[in-house]
Length: 149
Image (cartoon, rainbow, N blue to C red; front, side):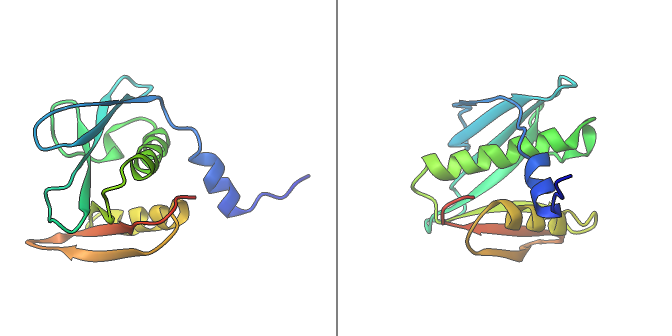
């Protein structure tokens, strides 16, 4: 019997993204990927670079009616996390203008720690976590430009 490490288990678990398609959504989002979960819920992963002129892009997880959302409302959050990871990796590969990508997360549900650990696992390079200005219950996790795993 082959012993599987926890690290390999995580890679295998999150290596099954749903299919998604890139689209032009218009408005403030420059890049948007759309996907549907197995329980037929529609989501978008959207990116914009209107934070600053320093190459910072923000990533948003948005539900079908335009609310910034979290994965708690789906029956299989693993497929959602897998898909979001795949979308961010593809964005990072195709878009050459970014220097860092910011992902917001709630501190009250420990999502900041969860997202930080997932990003650390699936992306190479520097990662930092900062308090979100004006929101004491949120953090922003930054991925700095480098090659993805």
